[in-house]
Image (cartoon, rainbow, N blue to C red; front, side, top):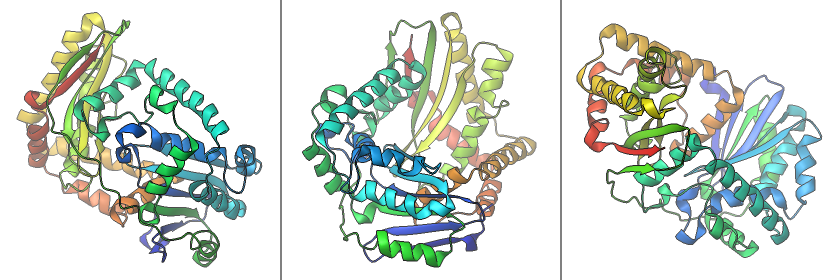
Length: 410
Protein backbone atom coordinates (compact mmCIF):
# COMPACT_ATOMS: atom_id res chain seq x y z
CA UNK A 1 0.00 0.00 0.00
CA UNK A 2 1.33 3.44 -0.96
CA UNK A 3 1.07 6.16 1.70
CA UNK A 4 0.15 9.64 0.49
CA UNK A 5 3.22 11.18 2.14
CA UNK A 6 5.42 8.82 0.10
CA UNK A 7 4.38 10.42 -3.20
CA UNK A 8 6.12 13.59 -4.37
CA UNK A 9 4.83 15.53 -7.36
CA UNK A 10 6.12 18.75 -8.91
CA UNK A 11 6.56 20.53 -12.23
CA UNK A 12 9.90 21.69 -13.61
CA UNK A 13 10.25 25.16 -15.22
CA UNK A 14 10.23 23.59 -18.71
CA UNK A 15 6.82 21.99 -18.07
CA UNK A 16 7.97 18.41 -17.48
CA UNK A 17 6.14 16.93 -14.51
CA UNK A 18 7.84 14.62 -12.05
CA UNK A 19 6.28 12.10 -9.67
CA UNK A 20 8.39 10.05 -7.26
CA UNK A 21 7.07 7.22 -5.09
CA UNK A 22 9.33 6.36 -2.19
CA UNK A 23 9.55 2.82 -0.86
CA UNK A 24 12.13 0.45 0.65
CA UNK A 25 12.61 -1.90 -2.30
CA UNK A 26 16.09 -2.48 -3.75
CA UNK A 27 14.43 -2.58 -7.18
CA UNK A 28 13.74 0.83 -8.73
CA UNK A 29 11.49 1.90 -11.59
CA UNK A 30 11.68 5.04 -13.66
CA UNK A 31 10.28 6.13 -16.97
CA UNK A 32 8.53 8.67 -19.11
CA UNK A 33 4.82 8.83 -19.71
CA UNK A 34 3.93 10.74 -22.87
CA UNK A 35 0.35 11.86 -23.51
CA UNK A 36 0.67 10.91 -27.17
CA UNK A 37 -0.80 7.96 -29.01
CA UNK A 38 -2.57 6.74 -32.10
CA UNK A 39 -5.24 9.40 -31.63
CA UNK A 40 -2.70 12.14 -32.35
CA UNK A 41 -1.72 10.82 -35.77
CA UNK A 42 -2.68 12.52 -39.00
CA UNK A 43 -4.45 10.31 -41.59
CA UNK A 44 -1.19 9.75 -43.46
CA UNK A 45 0.61 8.79 -40.21
CA UNK A 46 -1.12 5.48 -39.51
CA UNK A 47 0.85 3.60 -36.85
CA UNK A 48 3.43 6.39 -36.43
CA UNK A 49 3.08 6.72 -32.64
CA UNK A 50 3.83 3.01 -32.24
CA UNK A 51 6.57 3.15 -34.90
CA UNK A 52 8.26 6.03 -33.04
CA UNK A 53 8.18 4.05 -29.78
CA UNK A 54 9.95 1.12 -31.48
CA UNK A 55 12.50 3.26 -33.27
CA UNK A 56 13.61 5.27 -30.23
CA UNK A 57 15.61 2.16 -29.38
CA UNK A 58 17.46 2.19 -32.73
CA UNK A 59 19.81 5.08 -32.09
CA UNK A 60 20.23 8.40 -30.28
CA UNK A 61 22.75 11.21 -30.46
CA UNK A 62 24.68 9.42 -27.70
CA UNK A 63 24.57 5.72 -28.60
CA UNK A 64 23.65 3.20 -31.26
CA UNK A 65 21.11 0.36 -31.08
CA UNK A 66 23.65 -2.12 -29.69
CA UNK A 67 24.67 0.18 -26.86
CA UNK A 68 21.01 0.86 -26.03
CA UNK A 69 20.28 -2.86 -25.92
CA UNK A 70 23.10 -3.56 -23.47
CA UNK A 71 23.04 -0.48 -21.28
CA UNK A 72 20.71 -1.98 -18.65
CA UNK A 73 20.82 -5.63 -19.66
CA UNK A 74 24.49 -5.77 -18.60
CA UNK A 75 23.50 -4.97 -15.00
CA UNK A 76 20.41 -7.19 -14.91
CA UNK A 77 17.97 -4.37 -15.65
CA UNK A 78 15.25 -4.04 -18.22
CA UNK A 79 14.00 -1.30 -20.56
CA UNK A 80 10.51 -1.49 -22.02
CA UNK A 81 7.87 0.56 -23.80
CA UNK A 82 4.30 0.44 -25.05
CA UNK A 83 1.94 2.55 -27.13
CA UNK A 84 -1.83 2.88 -26.79
CA UNK A 85 -4.50 5.11 -28.32
CA UNK A 86 -3.73 8.12 -26.11
CA UNK A 87 -0.41 7.41 -24.41
CA UNK A 88 3.12 6.10 -24.84
CA UNK A 89 5.30 4.87 -21.97
CA UNK A 90 9.05 4.20 -21.90
CA UNK A 91 10.31 2.79 -18.61
CA UNK A 92 13.12 0.91 -16.93
CA UNK A 93 13.46 -1.57 -14.06
CA UNK A 94 16.82 -1.84 -12.35
CA UNK A 95 18.58 -2.39 -9.03
CA UNK A 96 18.57 0.97 -7.29
CA UNK A 97 22.36 1.29 -7.39
CA UNK A 98 21.98 1.68 -11.18
CA UNK A 99 19.10 4.15 -10.99
CA UNK A 100 20.98 7.01 -12.64
CA UNK A 101 22.02 4.74 -15.51
CA UNK A 102 18.34 3.92 -16.09
CA UNK A 103 17.21 7.54 -15.85
CA UNK A 104 19.89 8.66 -18.29
CA UNK A 105 18.93 5.96 -20.79
CA UNK A 106 15.20 6.76 -20.61
CA UNK A 107 15.80 10.47 -21.19
CA UNK A 108 18.23 9.70 -24.00
CA UNK A 109 15.64 7.57 -25.81
CA UNK A 110 12.79 10.06 -25.40
CA UNK A 111 14.61 13.33 -26.08
CA UNK A 112 17.52 12.47 -28.39
CA UNK A 113 16.44 9.80 -30.93
CA UNK A 114 18.01 10.01 -34.38
CA UNK A 115 15.83 7.47 -36.23
CA UNK A 116 18.57 6.22 -38.61
CA UNK A 117 16.99 5.10 -41.88
CA UNK A 118 18.78 1.75 -42.06
CA UNK A 119 17.48 0.85 -38.60
CA UNK A 120 13.99 2.12 -39.42
CA UNK A 121 13.85 -0.12 -42.47
CA UNK A 122 14.74 -3.18 -40.37
CA UNK A 123 12.19 -2.28 -37.71
CA UNK A 124 9.45 -1.96 -40.32
CA UNK A 125 9.82 -5.69 -40.99
CA UNK A 126 9.56 -6.39 -37.26
CA UNK A 127 6.34 -4.41 -36.95
CA UNK A 128 4.88 -5.92 -40.13
CA UNK A 129 5.58 -9.33 -38.60
CA UNK A 130 3.78 -8.12 -35.45
CA UNK A 131 0.81 -7.05 -37.59
CA UNK A 132 0.70 -10.43 -39.31
CA UNK A 133 0.91 -12.29 -36.00
CA UNK A 134 -1.94 -10.17 -34.69
CA UNK A 135 -4.01 -10.90 -37.79
CA UNK A 136 -3.46 -14.62 -37.22
CA UNK A 137 -5.02 -14.37 -33.73
CA UNK A 138 -8.78 -13.83 -34.11
CA UNK A 139 -9.29 -13.45 -30.34
CA UNK A 140 -7.03 -10.37 -30.45
CA UNK A 141 -7.89 -9.07 -33.91
CA UNK A 142 -11.62 -8.96 -33.15
CA UNK A 143 -11.06 -6.33 -30.45
CA UNK A 144 -9.09 -4.14 -32.84
CA UNK A 145 -11.67 -4.48 -35.59
CA UNK A 146 -14.49 -3.85 -33.15
CA UNK A 147 -12.91 -0.60 -32.01
CA UNK A 148 -12.75 0.33 -35.68
CA UNK A 149 -16.52 -0.23 -35.86
CA UNK A 150 -17.30 1.86 -32.80
CA UNK A 151 -15.06 4.74 -33.87
CA UNK A 152 -15.37 4.40 -37.63
CA UNK A 153 -13.83 7.34 -39.47
CA UNK A 154 -11.95 8.89 -36.55
CA UNK A 155 -8.44 8.40 -35.11
CA UNK A 156 -9.59 6.25 -32.16
CA UNK A 157 -10.76 3.68 -34.68
CA UNK A 158 -7.30 3.12 -36.14
CA UNK A 159 -5.10 0.20 -35.22
CA UNK A 160 -2.18 1.09 -32.96
CA UNK A 161 0.08 -1.02 -35.19
CA UNK A 162 -0.85 0.89 -38.33
CA UNK A 163 -1.14 -0.24 -41.94
CA UNK A 164 1.62 -2.12 -43.72
CA UNK A 165 1.43 -0.13 -46.97
CA UNK A 166 1.79 3.19 -45.13
CA UNK A 167 4.38 1.91 -42.67
CA UNK A 168 6.72 0.82 -45.46
CA UNK A 169 7.06 4.41 -46.68
CA UNK A 170 8.24 6.01 -43.44
CA UNK A 171 11.55 7.85 -43.45
CA UNK A 172 13.81 9.47 -40.88
CA UNK A 173 12.28 12.83 -41.78
CA UNK A 174 8.74 11.50 -41.16
CA UNK A 175 9.70 10.16 -37.73
CA UNK A 176 11.50 13.37 -36.78
CA UNK A 177 8.52 15.44 -37.88
CA UNK A 178 6.11 13.48 -35.67
CA UNK A 179 8.52 13.57 -32.73
CA UNK A 180 9.03 17.33 -33.01
CA UNK A 181 5.29 17.99 -33.32
CA UNK A 182 4.11 15.72 -30.55
CA UNK A 183 6.81 15.28 -27.92
CA UNK A 184 6.46 18.67 -26.25
CA UNK A 185 7.45 19.07 -22.61
CA UNK A 186 3.81 19.83 -21.78
CA UNK A 187 2.89 16.23 -22.69
CA UNK A 188 5.47 14.49 -20.52
CA UNK A 189 5.71 13.11 -17.00
CA UNK A 190 8.81 11.49 -15.54
CA UNK A 191 7.89 8.88 -12.94
CA UNK A 192 10.03 7.10 -10.42
CA UNK A 193 9.65 4.49 -7.67
CA UNK A 194 12.37 3.36 -5.27
CA UNK A 195 14.24 4.13 -2.10
CA UNK A 196 16.17 7.02 -3.61
CA UNK A 197 15.90 10.18 -1.43
CA UNK A 198 13.95 13.01 -3.03
CA UNK A 199 16.94 15.38 -2.85
CA UNK A 200 19.08 12.99 -4.88
CA UNK A 201 16.34 12.63 -7.49
CA UNK A 202 16.06 16.42 -7.74
CA UNK A 203 19.81 16.61 -8.34
CA UNK A 204 19.36 14.13 -11.20
CA UNK A 205 16.46 16.26 -12.48
CA UNK A 206 18.95 19.11 -12.87
CA UNK A 207 21.29 16.86 -14.81
CA UNK A 208 18.85 15.18 -17.19
CA UNK A 209 15.43 16.90 -17.22
CA UNK A 210 15.81 20.61 -16.52
CA UNK A 211 18.20 20.97 -19.47
CA UNK A 212 15.42 20.04 -21.92
CA UNK A 213 14.11 23.21 -23.62
CA UNK A 214 10.49 24.09 -22.87
CA UNK A 215 8.27 23.32 -25.86
CA UNK A 216 4.48 23.11 -26.00
CA UNK A 217 3.05 20.59 -28.43
CA UNK A 218 -0.32 22.38 -28.77
CA UNK A 219 -2.06 19.16 -29.70
CA UNK A 220 -5.78 18.58 -29.55
CA UNK A 221 -7.69 15.35 -29.14
CA UNK A 222 -8.52 13.67 -32.41
CA UNK A 223 -12.16 14.22 -33.30
CA UNK A 224 -14.95 11.77 -32.48
CA UNK A 225 -17.26 10.66 -35.26
CA UNK A 226 -20.96 10.12 -34.61
CA UNK A 227 -21.67 6.68 -33.18
CA UNK A 228 -23.76 4.45 -35.42
CA UNK A 229 -24.78 0.95 -34.39
CA UNK A 230 -23.37 -1.68 -36.75
CA UNK A 231 -23.70 -5.45 -37.05
CA UNK A 232 -20.92 -7.12 -39.04
CA UNK A 233 -20.23 -10.77 -39.87
CA UNK A 234 -16.77 -11.63 -41.22
CA UNK A 235 -15.99 -14.99 -42.75
CA UNK A 236 -12.55 -15.93 -41.44
CA UNK A 237 -12.83 -19.68 -42.07
CA UNK A 238 -12.29 -20.42 -38.36
CA UNK A 239 -12.84 -23.60 -36.38
CA UNK A 240 -14.53 -21.48 -33.71
CA UNK A 241 -16.85 -18.50 -33.68
CA UNK A 242 -15.51 -15.30 -32.10
CA UNK A 243 -18.21 -12.83 -31.08
CA UNK A 244 -18.09 -9.38 -29.53
CA UNK A 245 -20.85 -6.92 -28.68
CA UNK A 246 -20.57 -3.48 -27.12
CA UNK A 247 -20.97 0.25 -27.31
CA UNK A 248 -19.27 3.53 -26.59
CA UNK A 249 -19.04 4.23 -22.88
CA UNK A 250 -17.87 6.86 -20.39
CA UNK A 251 -14.57 8.78 -20.47
CA UNK A 252 -12.05 8.90 -17.64
CA UNK A 253 -13.50 12.08 -16.12
CA UNK A 254 -17.10 10.86 -16.01
CA UNK A 255 -18.26 9.98 -12.49
CA UNK A 256 -20.37 7.18 -13.95
CA UNK A 257 -17.20 5.26 -14.71
CA UNK A 258 -17.06 4.06 -11.09
CA UNK A 259 -20.35 2.13 -11.17
CA UNK A 260 -19.46 0.99 -14.70
CA UNK A 261 -16.20 -0.56 -13.45
CA UNK A 262 -18.16 -2.50 -10.83
CA UNK A 263 -20.86 -3.46 -13.32
CA UNK A 264 -18.24 -4.75 -15.74
CA UNK A 265 -16.63 -6.80 -12.97
CA UNK A 266 -19.99 -8.38 -12.14
CA UNK A 267 -20.76 -9.10 -15.78
CA UNK A 268 -17.52 -10.57 -17.08
CA UNK A 269 -14.57 -9.59 -14.94
CA UNK A 270 -11.62 -11.83 -14.02
CA UNK A 271 -13.50 -13.68 -11.29
CA UNK A 272 -14.64 -17.21 -12.11
CA UNK A 273 -18.01 -16.26 -10.59
CA UNK A 274 -18.73 -13.50 -13.12
CA UNK A 275 -22.21 -13.82 -14.57
CA UNK A 276 -21.04 -14.51 -18.10
CA UNK A 277 -18.52 -17.12 -16.98
CA UNK A 278 -21.11 -18.92 -14.86
CA UNK A 279 -23.84 -18.84 -17.53
CA UNK A 280 -21.77 -19.73 -20.61
CA UNK A 281 -18.78 -21.68 -19.31
CA UNK A 282 -19.65 -23.22 -15.94
CA UNK A 283 -23.29 -24.11 -16.55
CA UNK A 284 -23.30 -24.38 -20.31
CA UNK A 285 -19.80 -25.76 -20.92
CA UNK A 286 -19.81 -23.95 -24.25
CA UNK A 287 -16.84 -21.60 -24.06
CA UNK A 288 -13.30 -21.56 -22.70
CA UNK A 289 -12.97 -17.79 -23.17
CA UNK A 290 -15.74 -15.41 -22.13
CA UNK A 291 -15.27 -11.94 -20.67
CA UNK A 292 -16.31 -8.31 -20.63
CA UNK A 293 -14.11 -5.23 -20.65
CA UNK A 294 -14.24 -1.48 -20.11
CA UNK A 295 -11.65 0.93 -21.51
CA UNK A 296 -11.86 4.65 -20.73
CA UNK A 297 -10.36 7.35 -22.94
CA UNK A 298 -10.23 11.10 -22.34
CA UNK A 299 -13.73 11.84 -23.59
CA UNK A 300 -15.29 8.46 -24.36
CA UNK A 301 -14.80 4.76 -23.74
CA UNK A 302 -15.65 1.21 -24.78
CA UNK A 303 -17.73 -1.41 -23.01
CA UNK A 304 -17.65 -4.83 -24.67
CA UNK A 305 -18.51 -8.49 -24.05
CA UNK A 306 -16.71 -11.31 -25.85
CA UNK A 307 -16.79 -15.07 -26.21
CA UNK A 308 -15.48 -17.79 -28.51
CA UNK A 309 -17.30 -21.09 -29.03
CA UNK A 310 -18.03 -23.89 -31.49
CA UNK A 311 -20.26 -22.93 -34.41
CA UNK A 312 -23.07 -25.12 -33.10
CA UNK A 313 -23.20 -23.18 -29.80
CA UNK A 314 -23.16 -19.67 -31.31
CA UNK A 315 -26.88 -18.85 -31.05
CA UNK A 316 -27.20 -20.36 -27.59
CA UNK A 317 -24.24 -18.34 -26.31
CA UNK A 318 -25.56 -15.10 -27.80
CA UNK A 319 -28.90 -15.79 -26.17
CA UNK A 320 -27.31 -16.37 -22.76
CA UNK A 321 -25.19 -13.24 -23.13
CA UNK A 322 -28.19 -11.09 -23.99
CA UNK A 323 -30.12 -12.61 -21.10
CA UNK A 324 -27.41 -11.54 -18.65
CA UNK A 325 -27.50 -8.01 -20.05
CA UNK A 326 -31.27 -7.98 -19.64
CA UNK A 327 -30.98 -9.15 -16.03
CA UNK A 328 -28.63 -6.27 -15.23
CA UNK A 329 -31.08 -3.81 -16.77
CA UNK A 330 -34.23 -5.18 -15.16
CA UNK A 331 -33.20 -6.79 -11.86
CA UNK A 332 -31.71 -4.55 -9.20
CA UNK A 333 -29.01 -6.20 -7.12
CA UNK A 334 -29.98 -7.11 -3.57
CA UNK A 335 -27.99 -5.64 -0.68
CA UNK A 336 -26.15 -8.95 -0.26
CA UNK A 337 -25.31 -9.20 -3.98
CA UNK A 338 -24.05 -5.60 -4.06
CA UNK A 339 -21.92 -6.14 -0.96
CA UNK A 340 -20.32 -9.29 -2.42
CA UNK A 341 -19.56 -7.50 -5.69
CA UNK A 342 -18.00 -4.55 -3.85
CA UNK A 343 -15.87 -6.84 -1.67
CA UNK A 344 -14.63 -8.71 -4.73
CA UNK A 345 -13.59 -5.58 -6.61
CA UNK A 346 -11.93 -4.06 -3.54
CA UNK A 347 -9.93 -7.24 -3.01
CA UNK A 348 -8.79 -7.34 -6.63
CA UNK A 349 -7.62 -3.72 -6.46
CA UNK A 350 -5.78 -4.23 -3.16
CA UNK A 351 -3.99 -7.35 -4.42
CA UNK A 352 -2.94 -5.50 -7.57
CA UNK A 353 -1.20 -2.94 -5.34
CA UNK A 354 1.38 -5.61 -4.50
CA UNK A 355 2.85 -5.35 -8.03
CA UNK A 356 5.25 -2.42 -7.84
CA UNK A 357 5.66 -2.07 -11.60
CA UNK A 358 1.90 -1.84 -12.12
CA UNK A 359 1.61 0.62 -9.24
CA UNK A 360 4.34 2.86 -10.66
CA UNK A 361 2.75 2.87 -14.11
CA UNK A 362 -0.72 3.41 -12.64
CA UNK A 363 0.33 6.37 -10.50
CA UNK A 364 2.16 7.89 -13.47
CA UNK A 365 -0.93 7.51 -15.64
CA UNK A 366 -3.12 9.13 -12.99
CA UNK A 367 -0.84 12.14 -12.75
CA UNK A 368 -0.52 12.28 -16.54
CA UNK A 369 -4.29 12.60 -16.96
CA UNK A 370 -5.50 14.14 -13.70
CA UNK A 371 -2.51 15.76 -12.01
CA UNK A 372 -3.24 13.75 -8.86
CA UNK A 373 -3.36 10.23 -7.45
CA UNK A 374 -6.23 8.59 -5.63
CA UNK A 375 -4.85 6.43 -2.78
CA UNK A 376 -6.14 2.93 -2.17
CA UNK A 377 -8.28 4.01 0.78
CA UNK A 378 -10.07 6.61 -1.35
CA UNK A 379 -10.74 4.11 -4.14
CA UNK A 380 -12.07 1.59 -1.64
CA UNK A 381 -14.35 4.24 -0.17
CA UNK A 382 -15.58 5.20 -3.64
CA UNK A 383 -16.54 1.60 -4.39
CA UNK A 384 -18.47 1.44 -1.11
CA UNK A 385 -20.52 4.46 -2.23
CA UNK A 386 -21.84 2.74 -5.36
CA UNK A 387 -25.53 1.87 -5.12
CA UNK A 388 -27.61 -0.81 -6.77
CA UNK A 389 -29.66 1.97 -8.37
CA UNK A 390 -26.54 3.42 -10.01
CA UNK A 391 -25.60 0.03 -11.43
CA UNK A 392 -29.05 -0.40 -12.90
CA UNK A 393 -29.02 3.12 -14.36
CA UNK A 394 -25.68 2.45 -16.08
CA UNK A 395 -26.92 -0.90 -17.39
CA UNK A 396 -30.02 0.74 -18.88
CA UNK A 397 -27.94 3.55 -20.34
CA UNK A 398 -25.39 1.32 -22.10
CA UNK A 399 -26.64 -2.25 -22.35
CA UNK A 400 -29.89 -1.94 -24.27
CA UNK A 401 -29.77 -4.05 -27.43
CA UNK A 402 -30.53 -1.08 -29.70
CA UNK A 403 -27.25 0.55 -28.60
CA UNK A 404 -25.04 -2.51 -29.08
CA UNK A 405 -22.86 -3.02 -32.11
CA UNK A 406 -21.78 -6.59 -32.86
CA UNK A 407 -18.94 -8.26 -34.73
CA UNK A 408 -18.82 -11.97 -35.53
CA UNK A 409 -15.80 -13.87 -36.86
CA UNK A 410 -16.77 -17.26 -38.24
